Image 1: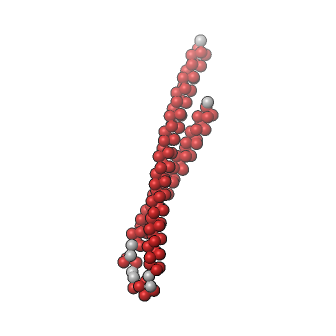
Image 2: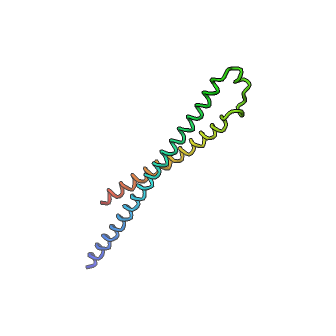
Image 3: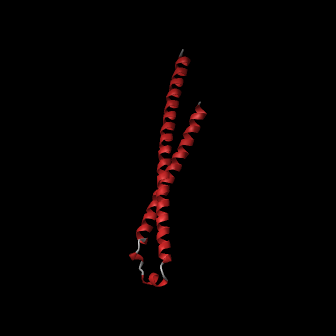
Length: 117
């Protein structure tokens, strides 16, 4: 009789543990999907910032040599565009790291659920 009670308790504990792991997997799936969306947004922002900076550089290179010599960097959009690109790059790297971390933990928890089934 005691063995049956212990066995039942073990089954209940296992079911609760599986439910908890499966819940964590669902939460990680949601977090990973959300982080993928943020990563795509940040990648687009970085691309736009890079394009804007490249266009500004091209405009400056197209100026006559005399105009280039008299022009000072602070008279252009370059400082603002460089800052925007740096910020976009930072945000992209943070989003990428977050997404990769979510993917790593999702894989770990999926493996745990698979092993325990």
